[in-house]
Structure formats: C-alpha cells, structure tokens
Image (cartoon, rainbow, N blue to C red; front, side, top):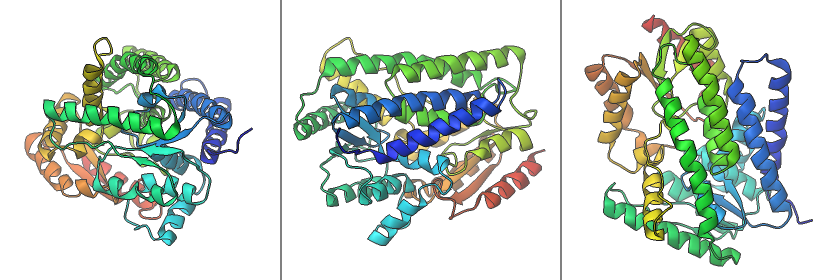
Length: 423
C-alpha cells in the first residue's frame, strides 16, 4: 500500500464520522437533518478519496472555484484546499490554528486568507503530498499570492488565467484556459484528459442545479423552511462532493424536508422573528452560531454567498468548445468568483433585489481579514440597503476560520444587541 498522502482527509473522515454518529444518536428526527445528511455525504466521498489515494492515484489540489467535477477527466483524487482548511476549523476543537501559525513562522503574512493557510501549513508539515495543484487566478489577489507557496514544496502549479470583465469574449478565453490547464495537468500526472468521463459528472451537477434553485425559492416563504446550518453544510457538500451522486441525493432528500415544512408553515427552532441575509461568508470556526441564532434569537439566515446560485447549466450535447465556454461561464459566475471578479455595481444591485424578494429584515456582513478586494464594499452596501430597502446592516470584522481574531462571545454579543434594535 502507498504512503498516506492525504492525512488531513483522514482527519476529516474521522471527525465527520464522529460528528454524524453523535448527532444521529442524540438528536431526535427533524433536528439538524441537514447536518446528519451532509455528514454522511461528505463521509462517503472522503472515504472513497482516501481509498483511491492509498491505491496510488495522483492527488490534485484545487481551489474551490475550480470545480471538482472538471478533475474527473482524470483518475485522480481531487482535494479542495479551502474546503479542507475550513471544514477542519469547524470540526476540530482548536481548528487548524496550529497550521496557521506554522505558516506565520515560515514567513507568510498573517493577514492572508486562512482558507489557504490551513492546507499550506499541513503541506509544510508533510501531511499533504500533492502531485499537482490547479487554481484560477482569482477570486482575489490574496489567493493568487498564496498559492505559489506550494512551489516551494516542489508541487507543480497550474494557473488558468481568468479575465475581469464578464463578457462573451471573456468566457471563451477562460474556457480555453480551463482546457489548456487540464491538458497541462494531464502531462504532469501522465494521463490524457477523458472529457467523456468528465461530462458524466457535469451532467450530475446539471441535475443538482434546479434542486438548488427550488430550495432558494422556498426561502422566500415566511417562515423560512430551511434551517441556518444548512447553509454551512451545503457549502461543505459543494466542495467535497461536487459532481457526485452523493451530492445529488443530499439536495433531493433535503428538498423534501424543506417542502414538508413549507406545506405546514413550520419554522425551525424558535419562532422566526428576524430574516437575515449574509451577503458574504458564514463563520466557519464555530457552526453552533447557526443553531444559536435559530433557537435563541429567532434569526433566520436565509442564505450566504455560497448558497445563492445564478450561473447557468453546462451544455454537454454540443462540441467541446461550447462545453468549455459554458464551464467558464459557470466558473466566472460561481459564488464569490462572480462578486470578486466583477465591478461592485452588480453585487450591490443583486443585494438590493434579494432583500426585496426575500423580505429580509437586515443584512449581516462578515468582513473577512483575507478578503481585501471586498474591503470597501460594506459601507456602499449599507447605504444602498438603507436608501433602497430601508433595512440596516451589521458589519462584523473577523477571520471566518480563526477564532483568535474576533471571539465568538464578541460576535454573539454584537448579533444580540443588533437583533434587539430590530424587534
């Protein structure tokens, strides 16, 4: 058997399996169903990945915005850099702070994004051994500046270039870059890309997309039939299980639960008093905040940046150029990629429109220390929401993956005081 090149995946498997077993044994039916279902989904996919890695399949790291299903054109183990960092920050008692500190001691700036620093520190500690890594040159300069670290560890790095403007010529260009990137990756690992195999996994994602949209539409109901923690769990499922039957089953099964609540006009937790939209990220180092908001405050998180989806499906029935152009459209309009590779005007307009459509009472903006490309947006958004919709926005400065920057006590106190002003 080959050496374990994905020890952090074993850490994910052990912790997610323990979490699933605990919640299934302790919690009654109907309580945090998304966590039970999502944990099973991630557990299955991660176990398969570990088995493949142990059989000698090449380990390919990728940015969350370079969709996992594209890598199924190879016999490989796709590992999401950001997903591993943040899921372990949620599951382990001290998160992955040790690996953030390893990178700081190595000389990497403290104010870069912790979503990459976790996996970077694990690589520095020889827990990950990547055969190659692929990432687009986006969604931010912080990301693009961090990934070259892996070259210091002799990991080949493939960088498909992503343009700034969202125009047809941009999609064609980025589509060509994705194809060239996959061909370059194939040469590194000694495999020819099998695009027919990749198509099958893209087609699974095409089936998932309308289910996601239906869930998004159900959130317009009052009370919202989707529990807060679903947003965090679905983000994990998206990066660990993209392009798999397990992900499709997760969404289909959860949709039935949401429909049942909708038909009964049933809310989750405490009676819904406040409908909030989080236009950026949730707080990953402590997912219990989601339950606390549902049960103690009566605040529903309608969705966050990873749970509103506006990209189109990929047409796999035509020629490769058409398919790759559609893949590029999806990539450039993927959550966070869309907001960070475009001017801020569409983001502000979308937020105002969503506030109206979903009858939001407020916005909560988590200003993550690593996301410097978004640093100037909160004040503009706050003014737009006040002037166009008449609702307030709370700004929380923090690191979403490192509890040492802003403690959970401070975050809860801010949210509680803010909620009192709305009631």
